[in-house]
Amino acid sequence: MRKLTTLELNRLELSEYRTIEKIPVVIVIDNVRSLNNVGSFFRTADAFRISKLYLCGITACPPHREIHKTALGAEESVEWRYFKTTAEACESLKTEGFDIFAVEQVEGSTMLADFDIKPNSAFVFGNEVDGVSEEALPYCKGAVEIPQAGTKHSLNVSVSAGIVMYEIFRKLFG
Image 1 (cartoon, helix red, strand yellow):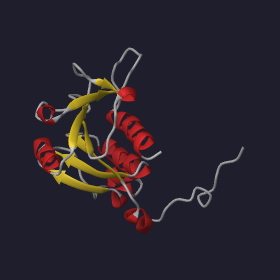
Image 2: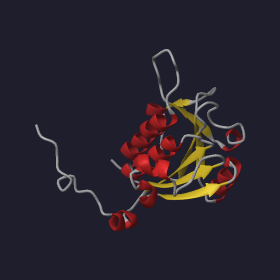
Image 3: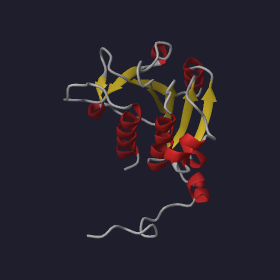
Image 4: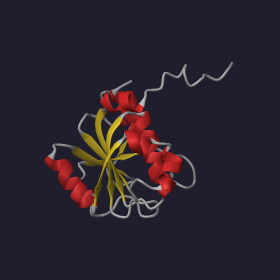
């Protein structure tokens, strides 16, 4: 076994990435305070060709050194937009014809493996402590839950985002 070289990985140049087809899904980052988590969202969205990130409320925006440290330049490849509130982001998504889903543990949630992911969907990821905000929940058509079997019953928000974005990619692109 040997590790593949960068050339063998066939990585796209930034100019190529900007022109390729993206998965028509928006990830909404609802008041996430950690800049490292924000950077992880960018890097993961780039890896799985997510079309856009919507950064809301206290979520920091590029350019920022701490975001860049984790994103490794993905903040340049992934399209993003900032909204003062998550409600404003959700209003915009509704106007654009998106169905919105919370990634949260709520009554009636659907386990991720059972969730029928469709194009023109948006997924809201909440604050590290409080989860998806109460202001966002009324806009959500439903909720997706990641099954867990440990004692904590919670995951880091960027880890949750990675799991969900992979599943989106697998079901819509892979």
